Picture 1 (cartoon, rainbow, N blue to C red):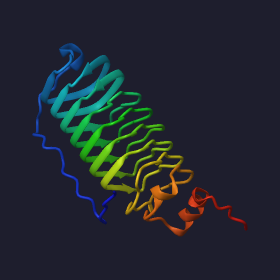
Picture 2 (cartoon, rainbow, N blue to C red):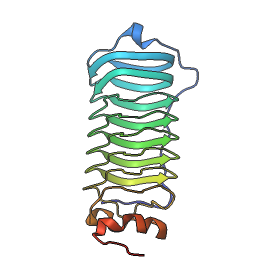
Picture 3 (cartoon, one colour):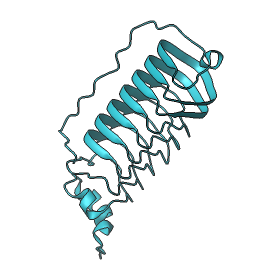
Length: 218
């Protein structure tokens, strides 16, 4: 069940100033590795496949991820700034006190991830996958995410602000209390019970009328 107040408060990552810079390609990443208190800056991170890696107090800045699979990864107190995470596999991730700022998320896979105190700000990308995810205390602000997939997800205090989710998938996701009035929601897929109690504008109601099985005649 969605429980959404007018203002969602998200805890910011706890990150110290002046973190030392590291080169992840040189350091390497393996299963169960723990990486903490570093800056990863202006680089490519490519061709890594590892499970249960832990990132704690890390800043990724201007990083492009290529051919990356971090299943069951843990991100705690992490910030992604101007990063390209397109097609990265972060399924079953644990993501707590994390910010994604101006990041590309085309085809990014967050299936079954758990999000706690997470901010997505000015992010963009088509077909971002959040299937079977669990969100609590999270905000999407000024994002462009057409065809986003939230199939069978759980939302608690999730806020969408000025975000494009056209053609998005919300089937089996309860949207009660969610305020979509500042968002673009044309063509979203959801069931009647899914959208019950969602907050929409009069204009948006027209675009959602097909969900009710009703034909609007002028």
